[in-house]
Image 1 (cartoon, rainbow, N blue to C red):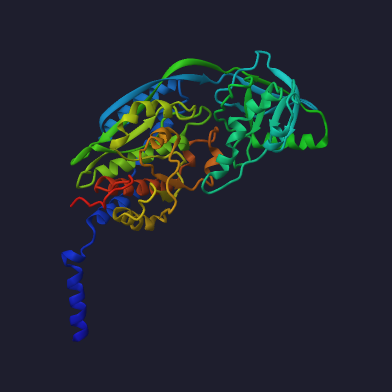
Image 2: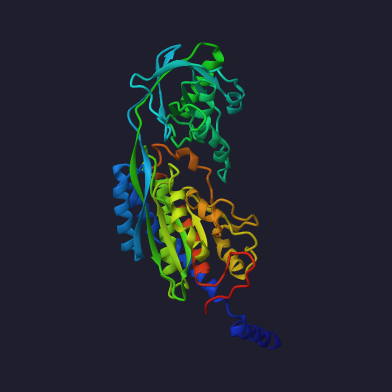
Length: 465
């Protein structure tokens, strides 16, 4: 009898208001669970990938993507939907080819790098010098590549967190200028890719102001490996490259929509993805998935039974791939940094989130401890490391003081298809996509339904009743 009475007393205590569950956590858990079966994200990325397709900034598809974004946000219940135009110098791909002319004729699978200058109409041909390591190109003395085509075949490591891409990025971004400094007339780089395929992967380059601009393209992994083997035989290698790219002034647009806050509408939690994509594929994983995740997560967090205290804002950034959005978006919104509660961008595909990084010193705040508990069933950890990079389009606002969040996704497969013709809808696993939405929506719910502050020297936050 004493045991029964004791158990009854414990049960009664558990039901008292003092020991009741945290309402913030209860609401977050409900949003998380709803997100795991919500069809919105997949429907959004399917629509964008299918109805708009590839969306190279400055192409005719850019306007179709703009109109699609406006209509989609309005249809999903966002308010204050508007367009923020900004000027760009658009790069357009023309006919491209690369041919091995010695020691035997063979075609090479290439994609011109975004921003590359064209070759003369007849192309350029020269002896190819193959460097198995980028460091070997950098060690080549000035003039040593005069009249030649530099080829770098160094591979990229597959990593969960995507750090292999960051390490390899200088090969694509800076390689053409480094080759030009040594006299090269063209530059070929093994695709920044983790898969083994004959599909090349494009991406932007950056010409150095103190070096000649030479045409540059990415080789498929398989063709890069073939050139390595040829070079090892000692046979002379010659390549003819033809690129017919062009540039022109254009306009791009960032599409913005809100779910207004009730108590503090001026306080904004800003999330997004980039609307533009490279032209070979349909931009499903880069970055249709990011658009879908941000839109679906904000919609779920804002459609809870109790509306958010703070405004949830979604941005579909207009020209990330060619590096234009960051400067334009920063210029337009740097004066608003003081009202930004948190800022983040989803731009790493659709596979599972495994970690979230918060602004320094905030992981221990009570609402963020609730976040950690709510994310645990998703196998997502709140990292002890602060967020340092949350996306290219928001880098300027983060540098200006907007508190940054960074959801880290499993990038093990992402670079198999990134920037290639294989960036298509079939690469998206709907269950993993929804796991992303659940993680983001949980954060957005807690951050928008509480008074948590991610800025230094703050007082402990309180939750909205």
